[in-house]
Amino acid sequence: MPYGPAVSSKSESTEVASIGGDLHTALHSPSYPPVTDLIAQWAVSSPDHTAITQGSTSITYRTLLQRSETVAQRLLSAGYGQGDVIGVPGPRGIRFVVVFLGVLRCGAVAFPIDPALPERRREHLLKIAKPQTLVHLEFADTGVPPDAGKTLPEVCSPAPAYLFGTSGTTGIPRMVLGWHGALSHFLSWQRETFAITPEDRCAQLTGLSFDVVLRDTLLALSCGGTLVIPAPADELGGAAVIRWLDRQKITVLHTTPTVLGSWLLDAPPGCRPPALRWTFLAGEPLKAGLVRAVRAVFPSSGIVNLYGPTETTLAKFAYQVPEGPLPANLPVGTPLPYCQGIIMRDGRPCGIGELGEIHIRTPFRSLGYLNDRAATAAAFVPNPYRDNADDRLYRTGDLGRIGPDRLLEVIGRLDHQVKINGVRIQPAEIERVLCQHPQVADCIVDPYQDHLQEPGETRLAAYVVPANARTSAEQDPGSGSGPSADLAQQLRGFLLDRLPPAMVPSVFIRLKRIPTTPNGKPDRAALPKPPAVRRAPVPAAHLPRTAAERTIQKLWAQVLRSDPPGIYDDFFELGGTSLTLTRLFALLDNRFPHKFRVAQLFTYPTIATQAALAEPRCSHIENEVTEHEF
Image (cartoon, rainbow, N blue to C red; front, side, top):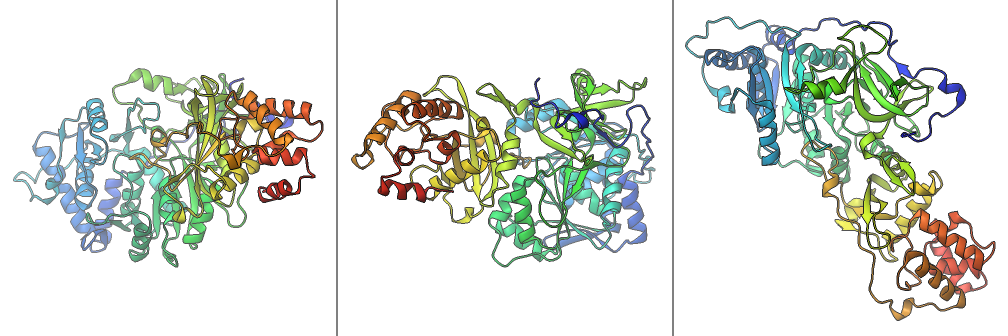
């Protein structure tokens, strides 16, 4: 049983967990006009409306169309066209958008190249994409070529349009080939569902290597709105981003939860951008702590949680977070039109509430991985309920379930599961619970190997960004008896009330912010290593004072296989786990019968506090216990 508990109840498991349609029934596939056609229409109906603004520079829809078609003419004159992969190096800006649209307009496939990516990563992606040429942004500034009278080709909806690399969490990035119709399908849904109009001002803050840049850029331009790009000199981060959103009267924002969380940590006091009406988040799980922070800084903004891998084109599920109290689990909601979600396990559909791998079925998926038929065939599998080679399910690699309310929940990645003390654990599930604590703004739970105490033992570290992180140190492991130790004990007790002991992290590490990859997702490789178990001599003030403390100290040393610790040392910071805590409880219960419960040991993790439980008549130690209560 690789996915933990199979079902939430017997009655729920009898119903197949799918939403958006029946696997036996064909999904409709209407045609959508390419985004280049929509932009051309706005250039006719609203030629003088501002299409893009960056700093003090703006261009109208008339100018945008003229310049992008000039780029298309130049590419055609140079011999490039239908189906050719053309690289478009950054940086982001008006010229980048002009060249990108010009590549699409000549019928070629646009491959954005983000200069912010590490050089080796860029080289690897270029090796996979094999672009026929690179078009530098100066193309956007040149005049009409001599043979510009040549008619531009029609851009067809089924034609390939763009290439983006996957996020590379597996270490092996691949190039995903998207097409015009699938891109327009998503943009059409977003415009209509959220009433995006020419009056909207959409921010372009996403890196060019991430397919969210298509939402950033093309949502505004496909609805006749204004795309707002920071000036090249703007170093936007934290408070500066919030002020920029306010100053530019941004109404629509796309980003990832981790990036937005880092901005909100430094939100300037009193700055509450009133114009922002939609915040779209995607790329990773949405946590309750971030929702609270968004509501505090952007009180006028609706919050939409989007879900869908690059392989299925931008997003295929959406959940508008309701007003009022937050649900216990923030789902990704329901599928877009002509899309379906189903949970599969061992080749069979799961029941309601049953955990399994999320599969997405839609005719508006991508065209697969460029030049990698084997990987495409492995990821896009035939629908077993229809004899149609084109009807396929995309295996997301995400662990999830569909609840009785028919909302999809993403629990985490199948390849992120770890085994702790024989129990299979999904770290994302712990993160979601931890972020419900009011003092937690964001967090990551990550496994690590502790070779000092028990060679090869896997343990969990919780990296926590406190809600008051602006006043915190850049990194504080939470050791000692100061506020960090108190918070660690609170969080440990909070989790223990809601999760099995094996899912409670061994160590809590305080961070000012979560490190991110160029794509705006958490960078687990950049997380600091958990602190090593302390080996320093115990100071005199921390030596045992009573017979109970001396006894418990010896039991700790036995369980932890270490030298005798100090009476104020934290059991978990010395390498203790839920398993070793269970061993300690057995020894304590043998020595002090009926004085302890296992749950107490999580919230009283020092020798001093445990001795007070064993000998409650020691008044000076009773006071210490009270100070550590949650």
